Length: 331
Image 1: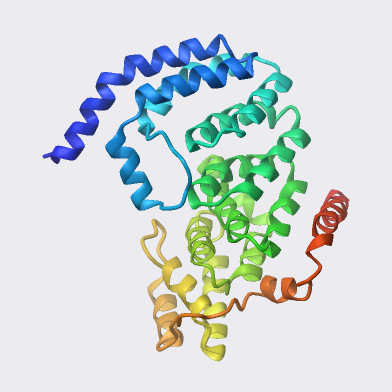
Image 2 (image 1 turned 30 degrees about the vertical axis):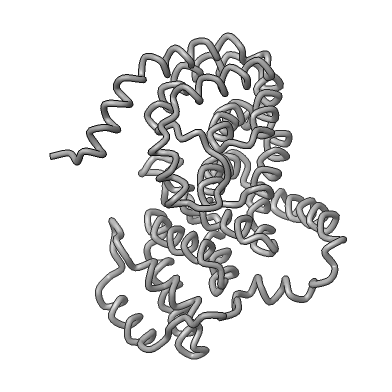
């Protein structure tokens, strides 16, 4: 039996679905006019908002910025009405719309920007990636990162050279940018049909995770364990080998950050880690725990520490590094 809170939410969504669909229909006429689109979307989101839901979202994700508090089924109903019209508009116009949407403060606008970017990415990938990089750089909560990760994944699947986009983020000073590699790897298997997932093993996903494991940030650790659970869809043996070798390293160095990721990666998987492997890992990690104030021990953190004080050069260095990586991968 549904709780009173659930019943109220279901009734609210059912009552406002026609309004959400109508909003989507009206927005479809404004795709070529970003200012008018944003104004109409703002007015519509205000009327669809649910104040108790907004307060609950702020409670579970504090500090994530402003939101209207529109429930996901209603957002989805608006977006469904836009899917076909967006597919028929030009990538240039869709990009203009996306750029205008991300300028707004409330989180819901970003979801519509993602939808517009989905139209741009296959046809004009370089300009799409420019905006996606900026959105990753501006992210300040896990929802912003994780909702953007599917676009990063699709961009990589379309152009494998784009792997360099997430490789360089492991060195970022921002924990939210450092979350993006794990979130993208976690998303990748579910952007392709199940029978094609094994083919993703050609991507250096596990090598990238090895570079970042040991990060002290909770949000990065959670993304890495999520990535390892998801990557079992692609290469379960490779994941098992990584977990066991990293557990051995954590045991030898008393690395609580590394141990946390390994333990969390073995939870609640559709394809669980074999029991003998789990037993060996638990034995290795016995007594290894995180402590308050633990510093990052990842390879990426050690490399990044060598460049402390050179932040003014970072933008140009990242740009040049990205060019070099794309040249190497493209050979």
